[in-house]
Every structure is written in structure tokens, then in C-alpha cells.
Image (cartoon, rainbow, N blue to C red; front, side, top):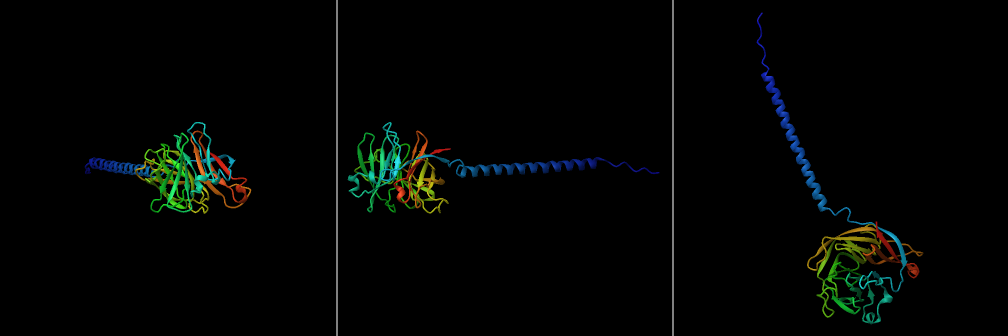
Length: 315
């Protein structure tokens, strides 16, 4: 009986090694692909997060109380005053306009502000003309007036002022539906200003979302504003009379424009014994206590009885 030669096992070993090598190569390629995909995902995530507005940018303000707002002297605006020390809060209203001012046609006063070094500024407008006026009280008590000639396309309304925390620049707003805020030197506080010279617009805040009928703004930090809007339609943010937050891309410096990201935080309180149309007015933030205050004027006869200055704290 003939014997068959034994079959060699080397080819099988080579086949196994080849298979293992192939699997190893495939595993390596898969690992590289997964690592590349994870890296791409991480880069995309970081890019998206850095490009998007911070999720925590919008604060929550909770109502904590209210005070009656006098319809003649406290119905337009308000501000807290740090200098001189122990100063009372200041208010504006039609009954608070000096006769010497109203007799010259400056018959409407808006929401005022005070710089942290003691300059108090009231914004005025007239029924017609080509200018606005800012009435300023210096820390020492002396009053002066600064006139701003309207820039091309600028509305006559002079609803409010908000002074930057460094005191050098002042934001001013126009009534109606707007996509900008105006930047001017703070009259008196900025050494470049003079009552005998035009107070110029030096730059602009470009908003990423239209706002309507803003009645007041105040800084809560170098690049953050809170604003009261008297928007009656509610079509811009889905709510009427909203409290707005505007986050600036940089602190205003008077040399270049900045952008502003607008967020609606909540509806302002609309409570009265009368029914009808409320009017949101001026706003103030007191950094010493962290208190936000907003004036809301009641409708009809109740403007005399239950108009309120509402107080809020951040929660």
C-alpha cells in the first residue's frame, strides 16, 4: 500500500498570518477613521459653541415689589445717583420740566441717567426742528445744556440716555422700530464736549434684531444693557411691552461701531384697576443693590392712581 506524502502546514500558517495581518490593517484603518471623525466632531462642536451667543447670556429678573409712580413728576424716567454720596433717586416727568426749558420749545423729557462720577443727564426734544438737547448737572451742582444736531436720517425723538460705566460715552435711542442705538460723548463727563459746540454722534451700536419703541436703557456692566420697550404689537418677540437685554460685542469707545445681540427676557408687569393700553417708560439699574426698576404707566383714569415703578432682582 503506497503512502501519501504528509501535507505541509506552512501554507495554512501563512494564510492565518495573512488573515491576521489583514484584520490588523482593517482595525488600524477603522481606528484612524474613528479618531478622525471624533476629531472633526470635536472641532465642529468647539467652532459652533464659540460662534453661538453664550447660553447663559440672558438673565432672569424676578419682580420683588413696586411703588406708586407720580404721573406728573415720575412718569417718564428715573435713575439712581451715586455721586454725591447719599443722593436721592432722580425722576423725570412733564411736571418736572423747568419753565425756562419748556418755554424754549424743549417740551418733552425722556429717561435720564447719571454717570458713576456724578454727571446727571436729561434728554429733551421739541415738537419740530433739527436738534436734540441734553441738560446736564455737574457733580458740583451747576447746570448746562448741550445741543446735538441731527445726523442724516436720525429721528427727532430723544427718548432716553444710558451712560457707559467708564462715564466717557453715552448711548441714545430713537422711537419707532429701530436696528441701531446712537453713541455720543457724555456731555460734561467727556472732556471733548462743550456747551458751546455741537454734541456729535461718534459711532453706532448695530443691533442683530429690530427693537420697537424703546423708552429706556441702562448699563448693568461694560457690555450689557437692559431696556424697557413700549412695543404695543408684540410681533418682534412674541410679547408686548418686553424687557430686553442687549449684549454688546465690545464696550463702546467712540471710535468704532459695535454690534448688539438682542434678547427678550420677559413681559413687563401690566396690572391696573383700569383696562386699556399701558405704557412702559424709563428704566434704572442700581449696581449697589442689584435692583432693576421700570416705570409702567396705567391706562385711562388709573394713570393717576396706580401707575407703578416695579422693582426686580436677578435670580
